[in-house]
Image (cartoon, rainbow, N blue to C red; front, side, top):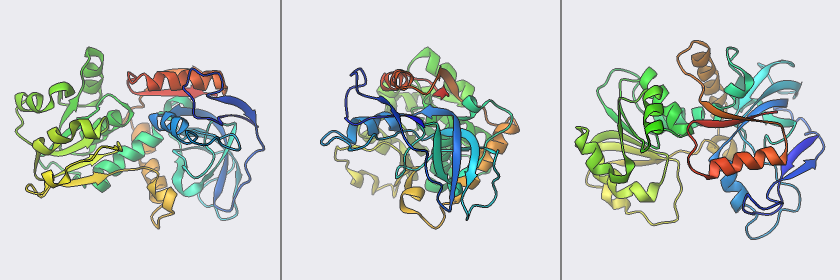
Length: 336
């Protein structure tokens, strides 16, 4: 099968940063779906793994990246239930297995679900990873109530992929007052479309939030730079509030700054369940089923903003270059 991989961690502009390769089709394991991929989304996580995983030693075989995918089930493992050949499914993948930069991919059925039927595959491909991340962050890590409790949420990085779906889910499913960071006119407008009540500039976060009328906020989601905003988050979080982040950092953080407020810091990594084979791994499939219904009911919209075409190294390199620019609003998808 056709695929795109890499052997060395190189700048994206290097000739061999990504390569066209031919590989055998995946073998379907008992819990697997074999999916013929129609479309994918390219995420910052893709670029990070390309840059880091072969920085000290080259891969011996082509490393296949890619997480978000939408495609058609072509084969089913012996222990799979709830799916049939010909189903269109979506999922965000597993970092332990070859990714979606390929014509076919094997994926554990417990972390997949039927894709929404009301949108094109490339539109649907914009949502799995960010929807799982946002859902787990809001409702499992931060434990935001799904009622009209008057609380506030500050979304740092509101116009990005995860921020966009966080704003939608929080606006539609909770009673939170939403404040999103956005520093350009186009990102301010995007965040408003996604559902935020207010926008603030991240460059002077404390002053901006206070000027917007909030001494403290009950919840913070950090999707941009944990270390850069750490002191501001500790200042702004309410007593007994919760901060959630998806952004790792090599800098030391003074977590004692949260002690006086009895505030919590929660990490969210969407891959944790599949990485460790947790007992509740199938919950990700159920979350994706719920999000598919929200899309089909017109409650949540897809967030694709740019679409490239074709499974090739050239196309994926272009996608990585755009992602690495740091100026992408919403999601970038590739239709095969």
